[in-house]
Structures are given as structure tokens and as C-alpha cells.
Amino acid sequence: MRTESACWQTWPEAAETYSRLIEDLTRDSHYLRSHGLKPTLVRMMGDCSNARILDVGCGDGWLLDEVRPREGYGCDIVKQSKIKPEWKFEIQDVRSLSYPDEFFDEVVASLVLIWFEELDVAIRQMYRVTKSGGKMVIAMVHPYFYRMGEPDSQGNFVISRDLSKPFKMEDLKIGGVAGPLTYFYRPLPDYFNACTGTGFRIGQVIDWFVDMEDYLRETKSGMESNILRTGKVPLYCFIECIKE
Ligand SMILES: C[S@@+](CC[C@H](N)C(=O)[O-])C[C@H]1O[C@@H](n2cnc3c(N)ncnc32)[C@H](O)[C@@H]1O
Figure 1 (cartoon, rainbow, N blue to C red):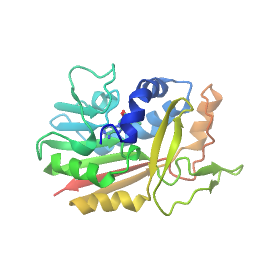
Figure 2 (figure 1 turned 90 degrees about the vertical axis):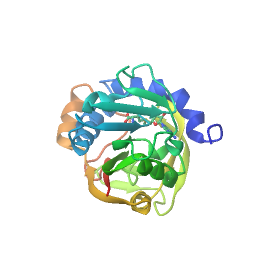
Figure 3 (figure 1 turned 180 degrees about the vertical axis):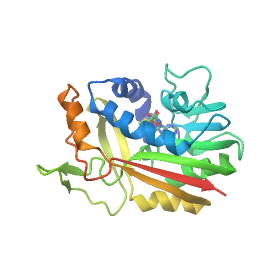
């Protein structure tokens, strides 16, 4: 799996570029993360001060820095220089985790499950390492609107791809620079079914929309985007799953 899989081939090259990109205050990806991804994910994870947390595909470890768990574990297929030594980092693929069964109070995957085909395998692994009574939180750029079409001049979204079945895009460049990466599109029910199929119960599901008034105000003050935005369709999707 390691050598053949698209994510192992592409992420080691792209990871540092991606990490720099999300810190770049002149790009709108920073705005979208700080207004949408971060606060929603942190709220969904709840109080982690007494918890053992695993962040799979943790990147530079920003989420652990944010929620400050009692015991923070991060794994990724790439180790980045910014991960703090207080977090227990290991190179691990989410599809073949080596942590013991029922080890974590909470497992989180932020913007990770879209980079490979074997969604069911990854969800089964996350289920296995989550304690009974614990939870898993997934965040992703909303599958129906991420590179699936374009906003028109009225801010409506014109979908140009066939959303009915899974497909992959092999030439994806995040922010026009990190990549090319392979992105695996799958319809949203595939995520729900993969979660419930392992035994998780779906808790909260949140769609996050860009507040265009605020976004346009910020854009005027120097933030750039080479992607047209609209507030009429959700940009991020968050799924909370409970292991009973
Ligand atoms: C878009 S970045 C997200 C990083 C971080 N979670 C965040 O929210 O900013 C995707 C991360 O997933 C990692 N990744 C990709 N495939 C993976 C896999 N099979 N197992 C573990 N991590 C993976 C990449 O190396 C990269 O760090």
C-alpha cells in the first residue's frame, strides 16, 4: 500500500508547501480555515483537557496545539518540522494504524479522507482505536462543491461534474502550488454509510458556508483568492460519530 498509493507518492512533496500556504495571511485559505475549519472543529471536539486524542493526517499539528488534550497523538505519512515535541507523533497511514484497540477518547481526521480510495478501511481503523463512548470527528472540504463547478456572476454555483459516483482528479494543486495531488471524490452518503457500517452512530453534521459580506470586506483589505467564492453552497462539512 505504501509505495503504490497515490497519497504516499504525492504528499511527501506537497506537505511543506501546503503548510506554508495555510499560514499565508494574504491568501483566502487562511481566512476560510480561521473562520470555518478551526472554530467548527474545535467546537465539535469539545473539552479535550482530560482526553487522549488522535489526530490522523495531522499535518503540522495545529489542531492539537488548538485543543490541547491531556495526551495528544498525531500521525501522518509525512513528518513536518512544526510539530511540537509535546505531541506523540508517528509516521502512520490511517488505513493501517498500529495503536491498540479502544485507545483514544477521540479520533479526528481533518481534510484527510479525500486523499485515498479506501475510505472504509480508514474508518474501520479509526473505529477500532476509539474507546466505547468516545467519538470520531471528520472535517472535509464539502465534496459537492470542492472543484466541482464555478460560481456564476449571481453567486449561484454551476456544477459541471457528475456527482453521482466516485471519481478521482489527479492534477489537483492546492492554492495553485501544492501538488499535483490526487483527490478522491465520493458522494456524501458514502461517508455516512462508511461510518454507520462500522458501528458508529452519526451525531452532529454541520455544513459551513462562507459569510460573503465578511469575506468581501476582508478581500478588500488585501486578501487574495484565485478561486471565486459563493456563500450559497457549503464550503466545509463536519461529521461527528459516536462509538456506543
Ligand atoms: C490537507 S492536509 C491536512 C492537514 C491537517 N489535518 C489540517 O487540517 O490542516 C492532508 C494531510 O493528510 C496526510 N495524509 C494523506 N494521506 C494520508 C494517509 N493515508 N494516512 C495518514 N495521513 C495522510 C497528508 O500527508 C497531509 O498532511
